[in-house]
Length: 345
Image (cartoon, rainbow, N blue to C red; front, side):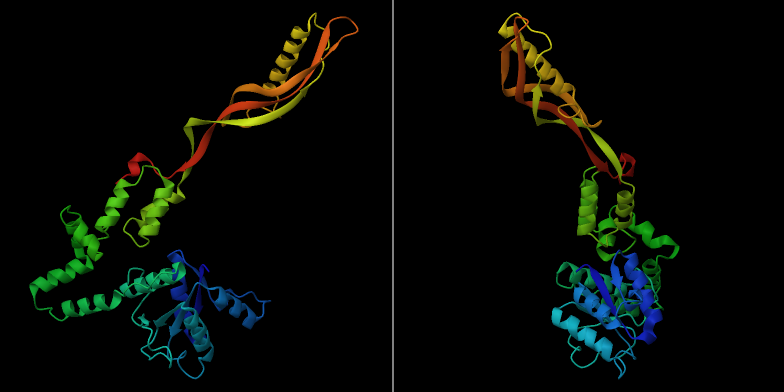
């Protein structure tokens, strides 16, 4: 259940499209009925997508709460029973009967901005539903109250400066938050694109070049200040061959034919059969030879096998050998590297 199902009234398609595009820009997969294949049954396709969704975003508007919005209400009811519902207000309307206890996120003033606190509440709620976590407390209403307080005291020079700081006029916010003494405080308040203390420490202490460390950082701080930089480094990952080789072994079983010429003693014939077996095992691509440029052959050792020796009619002895052995090799690992040292903060 990794996708988001969007339920909306047809008259709200333009506003729904804006939300779909914004959510997809956040890396979320959104299903809505515009993605339904033309040859597929309309009701069956929607039903399957709804039941498979990890989160269902329902858009409450004048149309969807009215008499013609029964499909939206039905989809919302099914999502509510599964605990997957995230309600959103497009218009200033009261949710239908039965949905009033679940607080809807107010996007009535949203104009498509990714940093809008109410849109961030939508993203946080959706991710929580997809990951099976509790929905975090909303931040949008507090931000709106703060803006009203500042706007209502326009005669005060201090509030004028505060407003300029909040709007980042003349990059005041960025300049002040760049000061080391204010970095963590700004990050805690989400100002100046600065990281919170925990994120900054995690970013500075991550192992150099580690792609898994970047993925873990994005998991811990999905909306963090370093998100875009982490994504860019992951997209630019390159393969890297380790300088340290790891020893390993490969079992081999090989039959060595009787020698072409006899030897004066049985011991000499046995020694010849073993030498030929060792040479064949270490030199054949089917046995001990390195299989690619990352492997290196070291040695081969016979672990089992008794020569089959017979007296040759020409005089002397000839031996064959069937034996099991161990190919000793080493291999360098190929990993991925996600940054250069110059990329470090």
